[in-house]
Length: 136
Image (cartoon, rainbow, N blue to C red; front, side, top):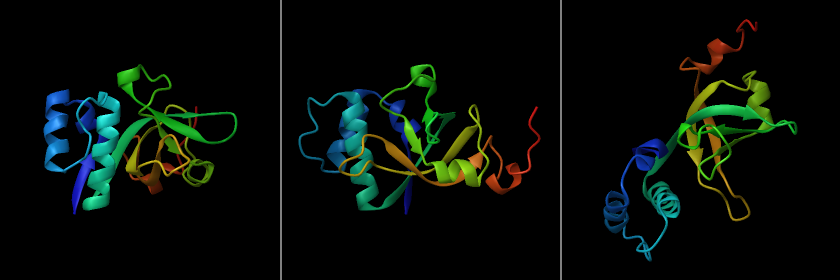
């Protein structure tokens, strides 16, 4: 199974992304915006054979859910944000400002954002080890 990292794709040029889209036989890839092209590549790659991984800095919203924000948008809300569920935030005692990385999935029909499926690391450490962190 091949792993694909969303950050890898963001760093590529449009022509590099177009070549990847051709290799994956994605229909109608010409003329797409970079963000849409990345989305289609990730969707096709995941469907075909692999897992996707993403990383970002967590911002927890008042409703209890959060988003992983990307440095490419100066950590402000953007189209590349990754949704983090309230249950994951509670389970791992996550805080705003934590750097989270893990397995993600593309948005389902009614969703707008990628979603975090499995937490691989919190602040570059095993998530189980960060549960008892000291807050100051």
